Image (cartoon, rainbow, N blue to C red; front, side, top):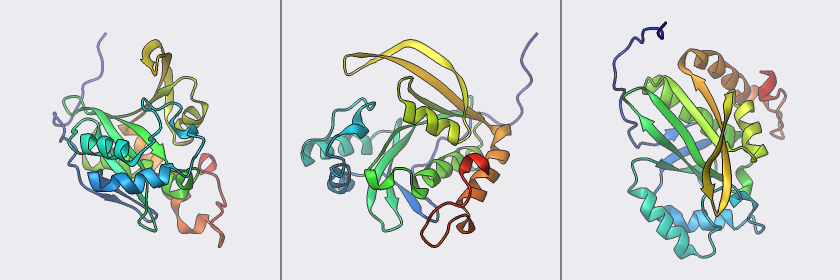
Length: 221
């Protein structure tokens, strides 16, 4: 027995590093010029809890932020984006990574939101924009999400966004001197139309009251 035939042209295009825009958020290619604003945004979390599962220590000086942004500005994989909220404030970063045009697979990762972005419409729309671009513009077959198996918030986010849990790779890596078991999630191209409809119902302005509170949860859309 063999797998089903795959139709379509391969390799798929490599993602052009261009802005992706929505109603409440814009993803711009990360640049050195973003470093100081990102440093200030992440400093809104003095506990540093947002860095717990990142393969980085918290930025303790603007110079550290500048070195990171200068390095990632030149990186093709991961391909980093600066996340800007509706007020055009740099409020986090994210990336495409493990980009494999030959078979049409791509992962979202390095997701790090400033406190102002967490549990926001902009945070959800940022992930939606990356998915839509991967499936519709680039024609990829598989969109992946991976996280530390102990990262309950990331696992919950993957499920909320419609990813299917595929299993855990035990002792997959070492991060900051500690073991990391990695949980794998994915969305496939044939699943995207239903997920897109769900996202768009949730993101619709009519789903939010005058105070910006959601009327229907994404999980119920």
